[in-house]
Image (tube, rainbow, N blue to C red; front, side, top):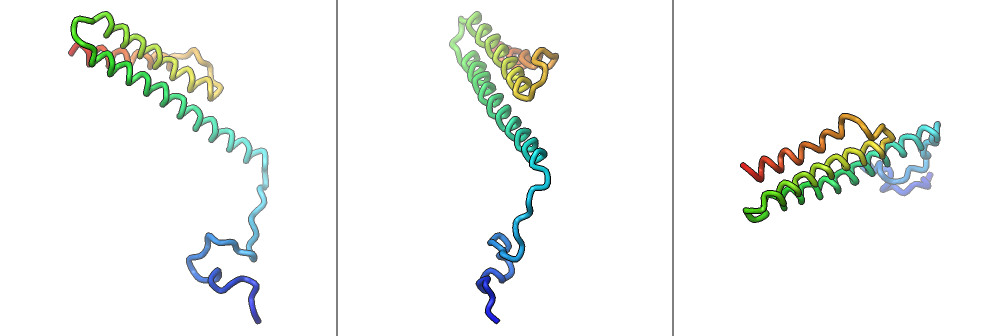
Length: 122
């Protein structure tokens, strides 16, 4: 008796192909699926936003370190601006996740400033 499924689909190792004898399972709780999708979207969006701002922070620190000597005030200013943007990156991440923006986590903005000043004046 001929089968409606081609022989090559019944071979072992072809599980990724459509199997007409095993239909796709229906999602039992669409609301849970939507919540899971929203959570993943929040994490992706916050990761992209924070890493983009942190790239700016690293660029400011590198600019402060490579600035010619005799411009200490400019180097300090760039490092302070890097720290401000570091705090902004933390605030963006917290805002995307719906958390309270003003928190002790904003003190992480001091880290780029401290590292930048250490690299600048070592």
